[in-house]
Image 1 (cartoon, rainbow, N blue to C red):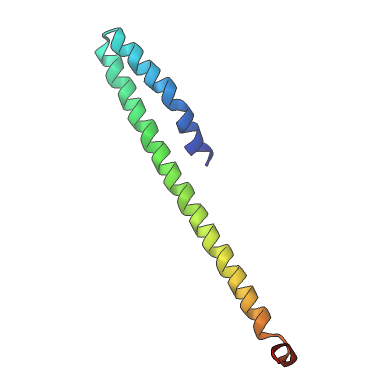
Image 2: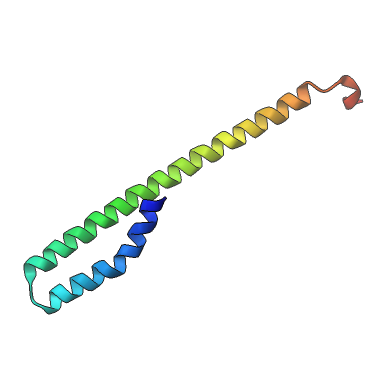
Length: 83
């Protein structure tokens, strides 16, 4: 989650560096900055996907646990409860 958030804050700096390199007419720096930008985007996308997957798995487990505990509590009630 931290890694996904950090990549969002790096975008303005990366864009500024790429624009500065374009203004300086330094093609090598432009290509370098764009490569770094693509790497940061890929890392952010992967970390966001992992984050989403983990939250999904955890929420499924919590939901399953709650349903199981609720069902067990209903099953083990006295018969007078159902009358």
